[in-house]
Amino acid sequence: MSSFTRIHKILNPPRIPPSPGSNPLKFGILGAAHVTSKALLSPAKSHPEVVIYAIAARSKDRATAFAKEHGIPKVFGGPSGYQEMLDDPEIDAVYNPLPNGLHYEWTMKALAAGKHVLLEKPSSNTAEDTRKMFDFAESKGLVLLEAFHYRFHPVANRVRDIVQSGELGALKHTKTTLILSPGFLNLKGDDPIRYSFDLGGGVLMDMGCYTINAMRFFTDLEPTSVLSVKHELQCPKIDRKTVATFELSDSSKATIHCEIAPDKLVPSMPELNAVIECEKGRIEVFNYMSPSMYHSITVTNGKKRRVEKAYTFPDPDFKGESWWASYLYQLEAFVSKVKGRTPHTWITKEDSIRNMEVIESVYAKVSLAERIGGSTGVELCTCIFWMMEWVDVSVVQESA
Ligand SMILES: NC(=O)C1=CN([C@@H]2O[C@H](COP(=O)(O)OP(=O)(O)OC[C@H]3O[C@@H](n4cnc5c(N)ncnc54)[C@H](OP(=O)(O)O)[C@@H]3O)[C@@H](O)[C@H]2O)C=CC1
Ligand SMILES: O=C1OC[C@@H](O)[C@H](O)[C@H]1O
Image (cartoon, rainbow, N blue to C red; front, top):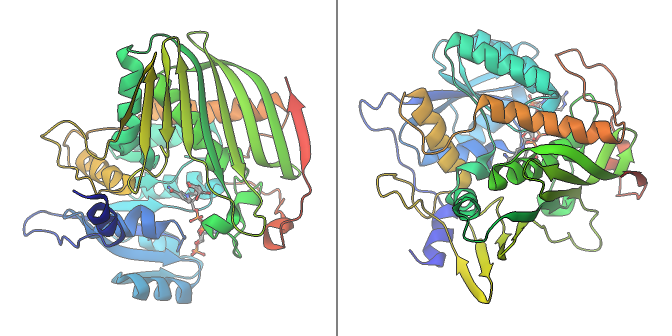
């Protein structure tokens, strides 16, 4: 498929309605969040075993407008709207894109109502809450998945395969980066969830969770210690930039860099790259995060250099297509798991817990408070700067 056709199909995903007798999974959505369109609604159009059945929002008007815009038949709104939706027996699975600090509470409630849950990243505010959610899901025989969509795309899996093949020898240093600007992401709005402490904000939570996940996934290693951390704070306890270095379990080193970069006159260009240096060469991954539009994997082995693309999996039995976004690969895995098939890729309970533990270890290194667990976070630290023109109030906090 040509790049033009691929990109056209990504932007205009084909509508594939449920086939008769396919017993599609009926989804209910918690909150009218921005991410839902790309993470669930768009891929659902092309998934013949998914129906988007209901939306619940705190305001009935907002829920109704969202439902109308996206053709969702059932609407729940008002103060008890979320719970009423969870109580609807028609719903099989719930998508939870609430602010991080509400992931735990509403995932537990969805599981209690007997629903499978596709849960946005990071899974919750703490590793302990993450463990509780997964334990509960297991005890109820329900599927719970932390939506690290990039992990389901062939690119992440190809990069890991190259590292694991040993063709470049032992690992020396891994760097995973995610830098995005508010302007580029159109993030400004009246829900400043990324800069609210009690809602689980901070860039390490928001974007750093990917850089930590990718570091662990590409290398198949865990950090044994946090060597250094440098934060820039947007307001007390809320980082807008974090650079951390780790020692990994094979004694190689790794660096993560996550940042909500200030816009200048125009939005800054995003950086979503990884560089993995090994004894015999290096792998440079351009855009491991949203690879369906475009990506490259450049492998330098001594004097030889090759550029790989990975829009599909090599396994001919797997039905992914080159225009599939990472979110559609993810949805296919979720549906497969619920239906008792073996997904092509999965993220385990242990993996999700471990990712939160690493996030906590980075915050602990610079004595930044651990986000509040459970459902009772009450401390208010909403960062007003988010809603104003970007003001540089950086506080640099460093530990080595
Ligand atoms: N996978 C991905 O690519 C991405 C994932 N994300 C993740 O998705 C989640 C949502 O992010 P995003 O879509 O940007 O968030 P939004 O701010 O757009 O949406 C969050 C939703 O949470 C609901 N909500 C409930 N209580 C509160 C509260 N006290 N304050 C604010 N909102 C509340 C609101 O729903 P209501 O409509 O009911 O008012 C709102 O629509 C986060 O966990 C984030 O990490 C975000 C972006 C990309
Ligand atoms: O998951 C995410 O993807 C990239 C950014 O849009 C965002 O801040 C984050 O929540």
